[in-house]
Image (cartoon, rainbow, N blue to C red; front, side, top):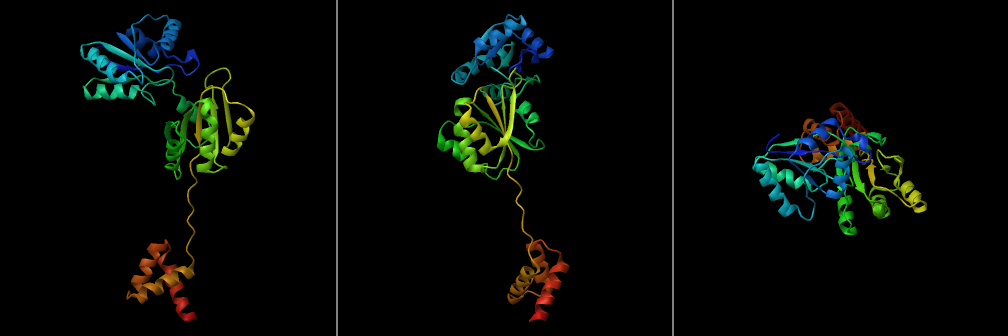
Length: 280
């Protein structure tokens, strides 16, 4: 291991989820960059690993990132960890990865715990296509604008949320997506009191109005239903053919264009146009 950044995922609740490869990477790294050194120290003590720790978080990443990159360029290996889950996902580590990429430093991601994927897999929602939206803004205007931009999103949506902000977020989700939109609320993942509540946005609001939420949440929200386009009727087709012919198109061209516009077979359009002419 020389001159490389390793992204090492840490448990999201259950310490038993540390893989052998993650353990070995932490042991062999020259130093560890941690979101909160106090949290990471507890994990290292549990693993029996003694290693140099440097802090790297949202408010010091601007100058700490340069120092970490320089150390790696000088030949050291760095293991980047977050407080829980995969670093660089909705996490300041994203910027460090960008800096390393720009400096030509190889980056290696060790597979492991990720709250978003863990929650999605047990949510009971569609998993074929999904989008990760991370944490919503604490400012109501920005939060609503974010959600409004997702109003027509048909993929399953993944959000992270803290318990003290859950009620406001659920209200905004309900107001934008409607009361009957499906949601799976996943909390305390991999911990003793892991819980998945599968309900609607209205149902979630009613539940947590009576029971104060506890623990960190991953919200899995169903995507918008596909818009069902109403099929055009033969009468619509005949009317459109007549309009196009009045504009100078031949019957053949008018039928062809109408079929394309309305998504109907040409034979259906032709027969509808002929019948309308006969009825006149």
